[in-house]
Image 1 (cartoon, rainbow, N blue to C red):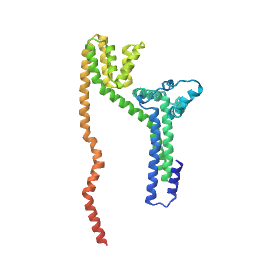
Image 2 (image 1 turned 90 degrees about the vertical axis):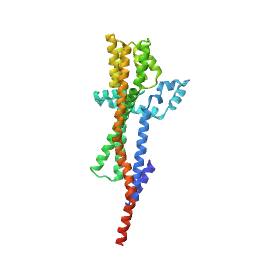
Image 3 (image 1 turned 180 degrees about the horizontal axis):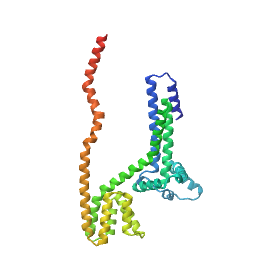
Image 4 (image 1 turned 30 degrees about the vertical axis):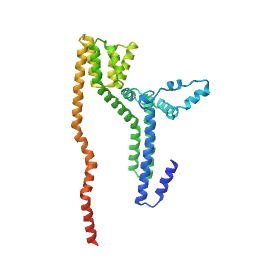
Length: 334
């Protein structure tokens, strides 16, 4: 980093010409990309996928502790993000979370729940990540304004944009993970409901059929079904466990399915026919979503065509004519 700053300073002290300005801009871009990549990598290690993360106690349980030295050695073998970054962010989050409004904390809890409750990720940790992102963004904004020799109000605008983006990056990443998980749930529901319907019509109870579906598939929906079954084993009523699943996912398809199952259970109607109707409705909605995505495709293709394809065509078609006109004008002037 020191070498990078020295290169930028030496380039800035030289006489202003297009080459030096281009070098400075290239260094700024490289520095921003490197710093942003480091920040995003650290955040991804902390709030990554469930499949790539293991609880700290489970990792420590793999070692046989003969004494304090072996335990310390095992802790030192953990990744840098879990030894240093995560504990630091947790402390920062604990100190700052008291000043955060309850509504914002509840919103973060809902986002974490929609993302599948990644191990170790709490609202306080997300708040700490937002603060760290804002600090990194502000620092990068200040460096950029210094290199560009920006004056008010341009420098204030650049610093504010970088700070806001750094603050919003953890929340945006969490939202994208939650949307991806919801999309996985929607895609897996028709097949899961088909198996659930067949199992119920074959004579299995709803709980046993739900367990069969949860063991058959390996996706976000099966994880939710496993959580419902675990809550029922702990004594929670089935209706409350299913409604909790509905509130976690906040999807119309899941809400309609759970409402139909609860109504069928209360009114004593055939559960198999109810599940079959829900399965057909889900397949109809999936067809509608595919048709809607197909109708949106031409509109989405318009921007890449205008930005990338058309300029290339103009260069190929009009480039030779433009060069010829320029040569004629230059020759006439000579």
